Length: 512
Image 1 (tube, one colour):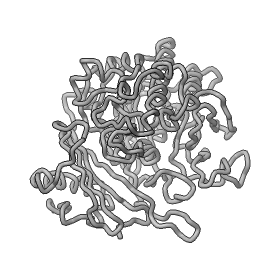
Image 2 (cartoon, one colour):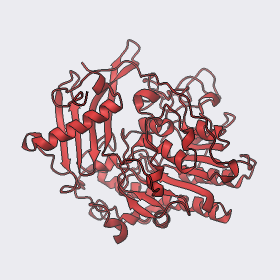
Image 3 (cartoon, one colour):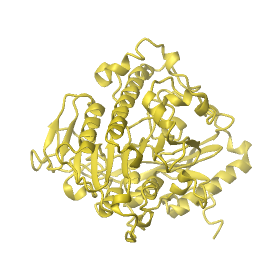
Image 4 (tube, one colour):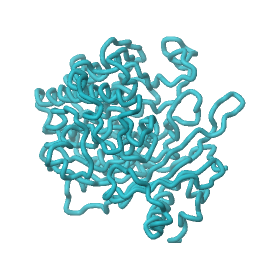
């Protein structure tokens, strides 16, 4: 049986060399809705952008993001290496892969070993140490829920079994001095949050609208929320368009007006979508939330313009993973290597420093932290523990640039065995794979470590991944991709590499 019982510790301290002075540093805003797939951006239907990809964009209305994209570097191939909420967020915050940062599964009460390491040096820690005022607003979902309810000490934050939501105490906030957040809670029109002091706020408002309002209050510093002498770093983790999306109770009503009368065949235009599935009706509500998020993002951008901050603020719009929305006839929206799940938006605007273009850089999730730090002029402060790479020179089009990645790693973990109390111990690394410029491949094993399934797609000839190639029919291609995968697993010191999983097909030691 292939399994792992504990996460791997990391070593390394942050580099402490000084970067730009506080007066020269840009503000940074990172907005990331949950379960927002890359194709759900209206500009992909515009000829300028459509010519850069081999697939059709969703028929969505996102006018603010469309304008933003024309002022930004737009990545067409950004990858969520483990397309599930908690693992992505652990990598995003720490720049480390799951085994090092501690978040190896989606965080909830029955998985006590999956939680962001308190001693991890995260992006908020680095910005804070560099003299930034740091704010976190919205969904976090990287903490194992414990009985630390500020309102009812000794209990979870709700009576759910198992508990998914969590309160994050000050010692686990990783440098964020302004706090208005929660673990995970999927009631979009009745959200709740804990503030900096641990007070709970229950709200009757669509959560993206409320969160952007709080972000605007922070930027405007209405109640002295931040130190106005410092630049600020703010992350806004929006929950929609994450499920539920089954009715108007779950979605933005203004957005819903745009899609309510459209047929499912008009909405689900991807060549692999199954409009006969019961889930197909969710497209109207999902796209309604997409358009609602666009409206709220527009409010945020307007605030930067009104306050004269736009020119000195780096703004990133991204997501933690995508949404299959009936593609491949699957109900699971995420946790798969298919493009709809794996490929995420990544748009970054920095006026005067980044020139607008579409780039096919295979940006991986652990690369985001060092790249954002590099864009902010804090590349010399990237912690030694970070496993991702700083690709800010590529985004800036510097004369000297790092080598572009040839491939991005994909991983899928499932629960390990349960103990006598029903708690999950360790995890089972069911699948590993990779995305290259031209191909996608996944190798899936059973609990005894035997090969169970191979998915192999030619993304150039088959952009909707309709036909999985037979490895026996293309042995040279399969061997080449397995060699590339072996390198990625070795570089990451992944459990597959350490335990030599599928060593008969993956040449782990070919360069030793």
